[in-house]
Length: 116
Image 1 (tube, rainbow, N blue to C red):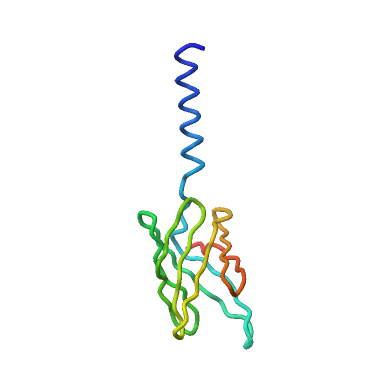
Image 2 (image 1 turned 120 degrees about the horizontal axis):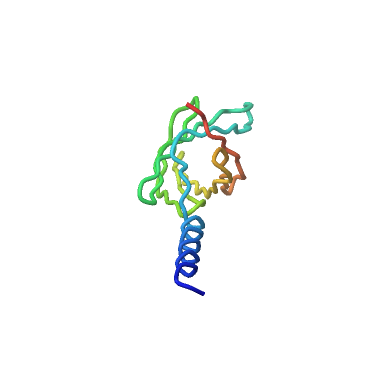
C-alpha cells in the first residue's frame, strides 16, 4: 500500500469516528402532548446545550419548570426537574433531527421540534 492510500484510509477512518461520536444539537423548542385526568396538555420543552450541559425549561399552561443536572453525550441526554417537593429524572435520545424520545419512571414521551 502506498502513502497516498494509507493517508486516505486514515482520513476516512477519522471522519467516520468523528461522525460516530458527534453530538446532535437538541437546542431549541420541542413540543409534546401529555394525556392526563383533565384531558390532554401541551408541553413545550426549551433546551439549550453548551459544552455538554443541558439547561432549559418545560412549560405548560400551568407555568414553567427549570431543568437541573442536565448533560448530553452523543445522541443521549438526561436531566431532572423538581415539582411539588419531588424530583423527576428523565433520559432522552434524539432519534432524528426533528424527533426526541424522553423516558422517565412515569413513561415515555415523543417530542417533535417546533419550527420557528
